Image (tube, rainbow, N blue to C red; front, side):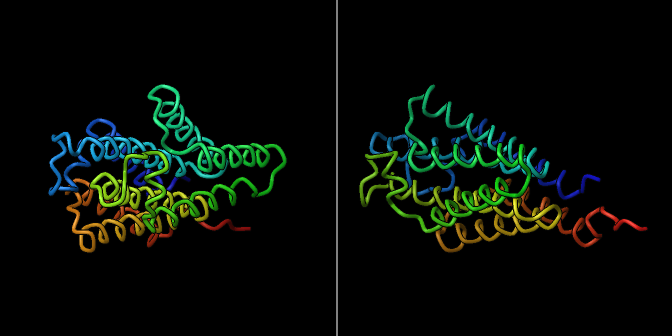
Length: 241
């Protein structure tokens, strides 16, 4: 039986992804002190829009995990590899880097294919380890992760600052991937939305970045539905003899 939390989480991720794809400029709202229309801020604008597309793809990919198991992971990886193709082949944008990000995703895809053929949990744990590992790395906001694909983001520039702060958001979503992989709905959905709420609180109160109200409202509604599902037992009944 599909849980309410899985539906709510998939809907949340789909809506947030579509909103970002449709209006990537909403990233500008999180940096009110920067005038993105000036030539001086061209680099920051390029990074903000590239990160918006990455966030949109990763959020949608996270929603695919609500399908569960191999089906969810293959759907998630399909979205991620489509992002890689558009960025590197169509737009000639070196984001994310081929090494180690794309190479690691290829290895994880192969391990999931192996799991589909031979069974076991190698694909599951490799996917969770990859996303969780990259996620924790992005959460530390290292300059190198921005400067590798965007060489113009020098120390002290607004471009680097924008890349680091939006990189934190990428890390947050990747950690959501790990939670959804390791934990079944509704527990995984509650854990993932807890990461969302904590991340938005950090950006709003620590980084003083105004998180758009639609993002807060959507997260609050989804979190509430997921918690309701968890408290009512997740919609699954134990089997009886």
